[in-house]
Amino acid sequence: MHEKNKLSWAHELAWLLGIVIMALIVLSPQLSYHALAVGDDWEFHWNRFYEAAMQLKTGKFNFFQSLYSFRQSGRIINAVYGSAFAYCHGFILIIAKTWFRAEIISSFLCLVTAGSGMYFLTRYCQVKRQMAFAAAVLYMGTPLVLFYVTDSALRGWGAAPLPLTTIPLIRMVINHEKPISPVLFGLSAATLMAVQNFTVILYVISAAIFFIPGLYLAKNRWRTILDAVAAVGVAVALNASTLAAIYELHNEHLVMPYKVTDLLGSASRLSLGNMTRLDLGLILSAMILFQLVFAALNWKRLKIVEKLINLDGFLFLWLSSPLFPWNFLADHFNVLQTIQFPQRFNPVALTMMILGTTISIQKLNINAKTERTRLFSALFISVAGLNLVNGYTWVNEKATAWQGDQVAVSADSTIQNQAEIRDLFNHAYDQANIFGVITKNTPDYLPVPSVKNTLYAYDAYKQQILHNHVNVRKQVDADSRLDFTWQAKKRKSTLMPVIVYKHSTVFLNGKKLEPSQYKRSNIGALIVTPRLGENHLVVGYAPSKLFWAAAIINGISLLGIFGYGLLKLIQFLRSCVKQ
Image (tube, one colour):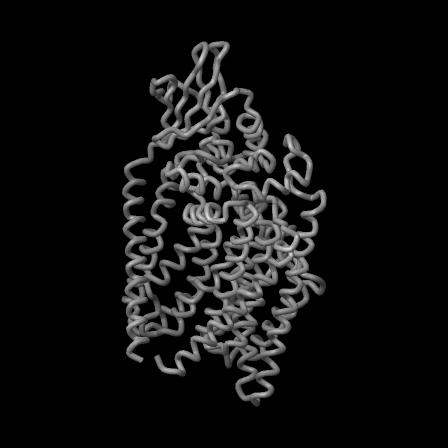
């Protein structure tokens, strides 16, 4: 390899190392206080990760049922919500061993993914390294990314890979010979789908904004259309198992995440003060206003790709703000209430705004002298660093609170001592009964008779599953099914602490029960009539042939992507050797 190329790679790695250092600085309060972020969503998502970890550890796999998590209730969660992401975190739990280390690693990876993704995106747009680094630091300090570090909200992880997956969108407009690489575009969409379902919806909308002009500019439009179809095929194949599971459950009425009537109450706002969950803060607000003015004054001189970046950014910024009539529209179209938080549109908005601002600042420096260029770069890095300091303060406040009386704990927990609760997070994940202390009655994806009004499901889940009065012994059998044993004093209908679906299999005392031989409660809990004395219940799940076909496609596509990546790596190494 030539000395010039070696030096170039060394420079890139140096700036990436800077991103790693910034991530560690942000996490330093949690490391020094030995503190965690246990927000509202912690119990739900780490239950999912715990399920994946235990399945990996025991070798007893069940893609659908929760065998170890959610009180071993058999709920279907991971199958329809980021299964690949859950298994990755399950692996992290196994390696890290304790809840504290696992969450720190997850937060670190979230920050580094967000920062490095923005760095590579801006570099792809021919931004200089110093400016790209500043953009990376700026994105790491956005509220949505930090929200995962401070409150364990998965929306932060949904935002983290978005800048990197934006590269195929930019390519659509600047590469007229081959606007779309089916593998890269499909893999980008599949990655977002594997993390969070809502983010991929935003990505599709954003992709459409770039695809239409990209198709117009393409030299071979039919080939571009075929490549787009192939990219969709790659994305579908890589998430075939999840998509098949969602389709398999389409005949069930499942509880969706709760609806929010006041959508504007969770919209993002420009602000002059510090950054909060909803307030963008002085620096990000000033950046947005700068870019709005710059784009308006220089619109005719902007390249097509720059115009699209700004249009996309301002569109999603509008959608995330109080200026969009969310409440008015939600009153007429109730389905919009499932969006819950307009702030969720921020990842695309801030990705595009930071990218657009970075390009704009670099354009101002094109004709400047070297000293002035360095001054602008240093100033931009300093401003980005100040914004991250704001985020650091936010993390520090949360870490300090961990030492007080604000640790999340369910009201009916047998452990109320804060020190004991904090100590549980330092125990091995498979030994600490953490979910007996951190408990929420979230009913997402439970099967109900109707989805018109599912508010009752919260209390019903608490009574029927969390506080079920039947004294049962639970275990997982050799066939990865839930096994329940209990003593019955009377032969009367008994509501068991397990959820069953239309594809569930039920064996009571060795006899397989048909659906007509048992009942389901208003949240899908199993109701059976036991015999006097000891009873033995086994609940499993029998996926359809369609799911197994999808699972095979999923496996083949993963092997194909791995082979493709290995081939590209070999080609890259050969080119390096030749140089």
